[in-house]
Image (cartoon, rainbow, N blue to C red; front, side, top):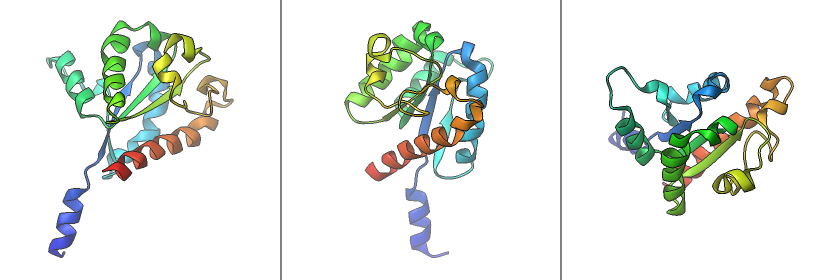
Length: 164
């Protein structure tokens, strides 16, 4: 391998995705995971979610570190998401701060019908997946939304890579 190839490979850092969701939406998260998993085996992206936390870790500190390191804030938006104080006061607040500085991409995945303009105005500014405000739970079968979500996340990753 040439010296140039080694330098080029080292210069390509994976994009860091932070997945935010309510534990009451765990089933939706489990459907999302396969759409993101293939990215973990490439240099395209590293996906982080709270299931990465292990016993005994200082979970708040670890989550905040990941929020500071993320390139993409991927959130599963539902009424449970909106009802979580931790998500709204810590995770979404940090995403909003970093987005204001144009440091990250924000990708909402709308799980159910919501009035984002009223309930979460910050997320209303971002076109949600799977498709122009149509929530994931309205797709029958649910898997019909998979390609839309995967392509939308890939677009966000490519926007981050284009800025680098």
